[in-house]
Length: 521
Image (cartoon, rainbow, N blue to C red):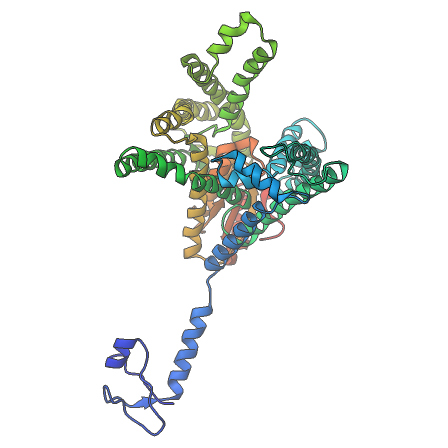
């Protein structure tokens, strides 16, 4: 069948397709151009080929969406042995509880990745004192692989304990008139439910690993972000209800403006850093980016634990003499705000000195024939310490602001928003957006190294970029929120596949060969 190939043909302009004619016709009736048959078939084949060919970035985005969808589907699958009629009545008793929360309490992945995160944190702390964990920690990438295996075993033990606790709790859940949501309570149900919840945890870890390997971003970070996003979307009806009660458009607009301002502040703070310039003996000049948020969000969790400990003890004692002190530590009081802030600021100084071992940093640089460039030519360690001391107050006040301000502001608007959750969400988004940006320019990025030290990761990136290598640090912003207490989120160094050898040579010459991955993925 002959076609008209003229791009200016009226028929093609109006329909977007070449005009078709019966065999025997040689010229187009619309524009008079000669017709062709073989060429159009070749062109259409090329168009079809182009339509079904996906770039590496597009494939990774689809993989990520697919894995996240699979994980969210698992949320609505209950553990075996649940009476669905009793469960429905139990949900009715919950009233306006968000639907996400309803399913999460009886889901096969109710434990999520928390046993894995907790186990990894425990193993990491133990590795400071216990052999052979301590020696493995010093071995770089290969040592981290061994530590991860131990962490997975510890994950099983924690999931076993927590899973049994949830199974026992499900047995005690009853509907409005006392009907149990578990059909046949007993040892068999507890055993099956516990094993199911353990399997759900390891299934979650597997999905996270697949996202890291085949998708976009760090898998654990993506799942954490997805969980946060699901809760936010489940609160959308609440936002609408609040806005309907108080001048819909103006109320919601105020909410949006304040949220945007908070996000902008987080982006500015998380991307801000001070450059500590480094010079190597061969003349290479680069820098260590020292983030303004030197202790991340770690002080908040520890401060919350420390301030809750005396409150819990006072509640257990129930002594009349302790009532004034108990009232002082109530979250609604001004003294609670002052004490909480003081603890956060104190821990911020403490953790910064712990996370940033300036002596170790200077020793590592000297072992690589490099030195810190100080304008005043002072002692290198003192120069770094002085730089940190100037940044700590800014980071500590920033953290205190986000602990209290969002809750106070949004409470007036009738909505609950946790500032630390917002910081974590924005940090994960920064990682995702940075990876998408660089993958749009360069396909086939591969992992060549793995770090857990935020300043050294920044130094390596500046070295590679100074050598002309496109480089992406996967998990950098999220890891920087957790520092030592988030070893399960490693910083992966990704470079173009055709620059692997050159990148490894730079790492060996200027930093530490122990961080090089033996397998590229």
